[in-house]
Amino acid sequence: MAINVYLNFDGNTREAVEFYAKVFETETPQMMTFGDSPQDPSFPLPEEAKNRIMHARLEAAGGVLMFSDTFPGMPFTQGNNISLTVTSPDEESIKTWFAKLSDGGKVNMELQKTFWSNCYGSLRDKFGIEWQLSCD
Image 1 (cartoon, helix red, strand yellow):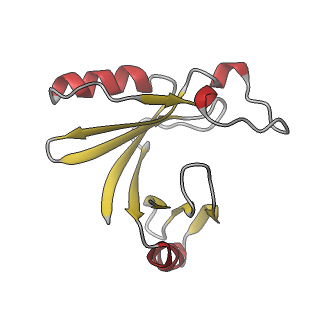
Image 2: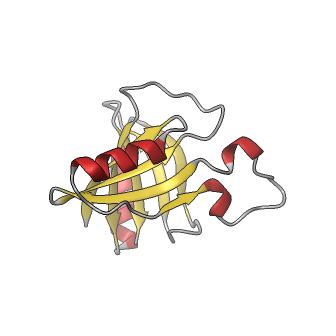
């Protein structure tokens, strides 16, 4: 299990990742755009979303930073663009932690199977902290 920092940006994730890679003298990580992800014909991807970064990961100074652009039109407030991400291979632990963290909070996305995880969900806990939980 690991708890990592997830940083969101409003269309400039590529620039941020490349900057942090230079700062921490790491290789620039691979980045997946929304356009690279599997598409659902029922929900066509807007053209302005295709080149935005859906996910990037950078190992730096003994930790992991993860990055994503917001989807066009989503609210974005600089300074509030950080969430904590918990990953674990144990799906039951993910479900237990999600239930406990969501108590008194607000679920943004119920736990569900996605193309990157068998069990992923996101929430804001009762203290206003954003969390993403994902089964590896």
